[in-house]
Length: 49
Image 1 (tube, rainbow, N blue to C red):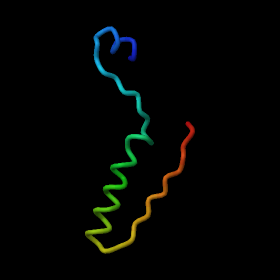
Image 2 (image 1 turned 30 degrees about the vertical axis):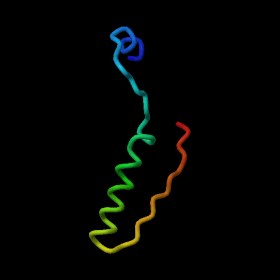
Image 3 (image 1 turned 90 degrees about the vertical axis):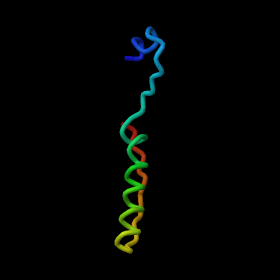
Image 4 (image 1 turned 135 degrees about the horizontal axis):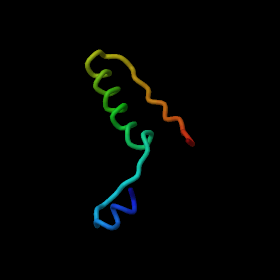
């Protein structure tokens, strides 16, 4: 896919699930914490895969 993007002069970002999805989980935790007055802790564990 990177080669096709280069040939077509299209920006291409290859980011994995861990790098791109943790911000949504953090936002969800904040929303739950605010809505239900509970403590939420996000534990970021490195995933080498």
